[in-house]
Length: 324
Image (cartoon, rainbow, N blue to C red; front, side, top):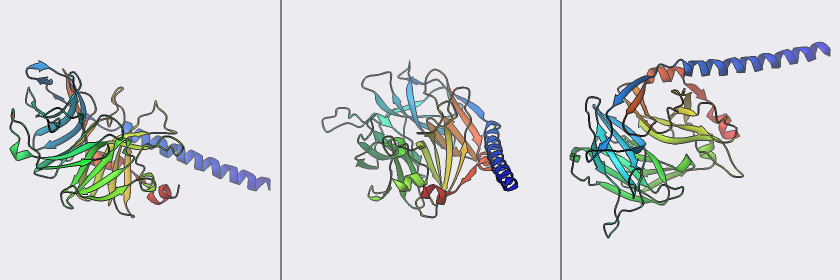
């Protein structure tokens, strides 16, 4: 009996040691990640220094498109910005919607965005949970500096949509709500195709839920659809998550909306005190770009090789997470 007790105890200690070693190795792999830095020019609007709260990033050819809320003016404004690595200035478009009288609507929060190849899909929301939103698609061919933008597609949503991902192949737009409690799927005409919430979100480790049914999950800040894979960038927060530990994650879903989806993730190391995934993210030319800080007098983008991230990614057992 004593021998069996010692055998069971030894087995449990070995399992605990292996789990701790695996966790250490995963953390070490993330910490060993090579992260490059790219400087962008200072933000100036109408010739004056400006400051804007970063929301979304998309990279097309050599252009960096950024959505941001200008916070140093009242009322605050929703902006679409454009520059490249060699320019010393930004193109600035005020995309704050107006009402029938021409007054500014309270939709000053532009979110994470993605291009379908010819248009930029951008959500414009109220800066509050459960606020209303307007989804717009702007043709990139008609973007001329100094001239107002005209949306080719526009439809309202009765929720705060903080990020859009776009599947050009399927002609589907994925919208993440505040804290990603709900994911909406629309066709390119704005017709709702599906809503994911509750257990479907829990199984994907998405959404931060408070209250009686509280749980930890990824609050998506920006996400991109690339082929059949959905890359979701944000902060993993909620009950049981240590506030001092790095919370940035990149989740990679294959067949995201299907029952048999696959999910991988990588924990991202902090850059000093900065969480890499706390705001905007884009994927281009084999690199993943992060723009986690507000735009102002000095600006920087962090970039990581996608192949390096994939080598460090961890397969999540979707069946186990759905059973909890």
